Image (cartoon, rainbow, N blue to C red; front, side, top):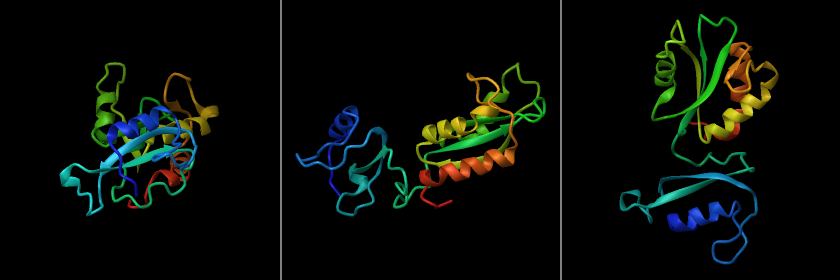
Length: 172
């Protein structure tokens, strides 16, 4: 594994492809983002500030299988009794979590009954997974500016799990 500074990682990201690290081509895939996680290499201990970089590219398959963390967010499904047959599919970070997100959304005076968490899928790069799920369910979307769908919880759950296979390391 090659260790580089945060600034170098940022510069590589801004170029939107990883061309080289030491003048040698590595790969040239579009980069959609990156995460920094504490180093797991004893030679570069996390308590000394070392971090590993995970790049998000189109090569998603098994990208997270060697990561010791189960994910940094959730794609979730919420339901509301005041909207029968309609579910909300969204993303939230693990700082907030789906239960807290449901509470925040339910605090609006426009919602007569609180949202209920139906399902939460822990993953990495949840924003991308959420968009893929929204795209897959586009025909069931009620409003293109909202995250509500006229689809069963079970069908949405199956789609999230199927599309989400490349966004987890299998720890959950």
